[in-house]
Amino acid sequence: MAPHAILFDMDGLLLDTEKVCLDSFVETRRQFSLSDSPDVFMRCVGVRLPECDRIIQESLPDQVAFKDFNDTWRERISATLRHDIPLKAGALQLFQILASKGYLMGVATSTQTEVAKSHLEKTGLLPFLGGVIGGDNVQEGKPNPEVYHKIAKHLGVSAADCVAFEDSETGTRAALASGATTVQIPDLIPPSAEMLKSGHVIAPSLLEGALKVELIETSDI
Image 1 (cartoon, rainbow, N blue to C red):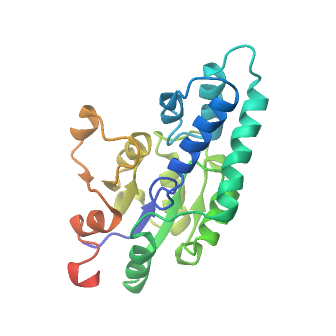
Image 2 (spheres, one colour):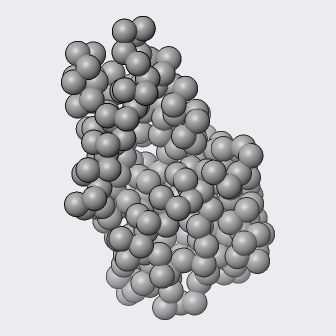
């Protein structure tokens, strides 16, 4: 049976922004004469802003004010993304194919809703979407499935009747908990041994993931 809607995470899945954020994080750490500590950034992948802020703040020594570090980091990210928001390979093509087949599509992201909409508009993906729910619109962030239930409800369907695409382990756990058929396209962090036991689809790219769950056919590509 065809799914009622296709749900997507955003950063690291549709938009190749996680690498921008990581590079900016390392550059900011160096600016403040700190070790690169990419592992600290990796713990932020897939989580909402308040939790990310807590992780960053706890990683900083007393002599570095969180506000100074965070403002510098965020401005560095914004400066890069003002010029270019890179799309993941196959993202626009997949949206075009799914739209031609009549699928409803929505985004469930930990990023704040208006920021997410702005980024999706700049990359040309927003017109394909029936809705965007960000981390500021839920009480519980991923891995809680609330954001998936909310975007599904917004689209008039049940999350259990959808296919959800994710990249991070945190997001994948949220999609699985929602009952959606889950496809993981790992970005910066490979799936853990525990994650590999979950039985969901794991693929190296969006198009290959869509092929594996039969949303599209080879002839569509």
